[in-house]
Image (cartoon, one colour):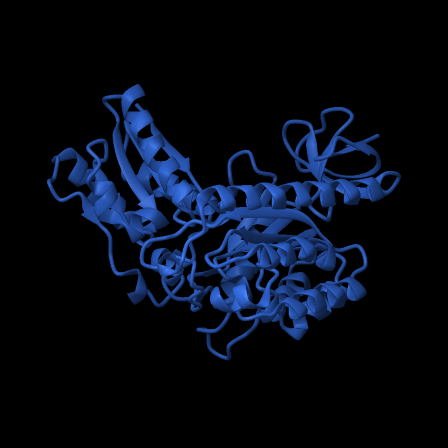
Length: 418
């Protein structure tokens, strides 16, 4: 008898899977596998469907519940799979009542598989406090959900709804609770965290939240941000990056492309020059900062010259940690109706962009040799620097410690510590 959770996608899903585990367990579900899906690419959806089929082959008696962004966006598609017993939405997956209803539906073999509400009607982000994530030494606080923007390639607003934020007092209380449980690092996460506060009284910004947390929780050793949209970074956030050593010098940017026409067709709100200027500004404020970024390869209408500007952006912004996405047309998005590139071109450009990212990371790691870094230890004999670089430890250390270590080399992906 068991309840298993299979999680795809982002940190947000990882956090929410812990809520699912708690609420589904409390509802008494067993012999059930919950598949928490991602919709960001067609490949993510394909992998989820493949996993569902594999689970049923290997465990014929198990019942399968599907949720997450792909289930929210395409509930009928998953309900049509013979292996699936129930499909629930992104808001429903966090509700104790929903899991009680799911148990009743599974026990009665209800013919109605789908319990997916209108995500666009959700107006408030509700706190779902968790005590941490199994096998993670960093704690996550979900401060925001949803997105108001409509980038032409992105289906996520249809899986997550409109932007809504957690009130500051609740964020601080949850972070303090995690620190009291022994966590040294807290990561603020959400779908679009730089839009934090737009639906709250007084419209506080992310920078104000960061400053409040660092002021009110002096025991918090490290505060880290998940992916941000540089065009939304406010003055308080930049001030904190320059003045607050406990705010980690690592930013992962949602850049997506390096060519202005492609950015316009993506309906992004920044230009190439703005992205470069932002990185230059932050580097002046925080010289030890490291930048990562999401970049899409092979967007519709992208020429070789346009793609070259994305390659060049890696050096222009000093990006060392790339997440590369081969463009994937998502049904219902404007980009899916644009003239598509041949898939071999898309894959080849993604390969070249990954190679560029690996080379850039290698150069960054070269510069780290001989440096002393504060490393938060994790399981498996590794740790993370303040810049979120992986470090292979010389000997196993209890997870959750912060050590001052000298970097002695690297293997192209991880630093090696003395």
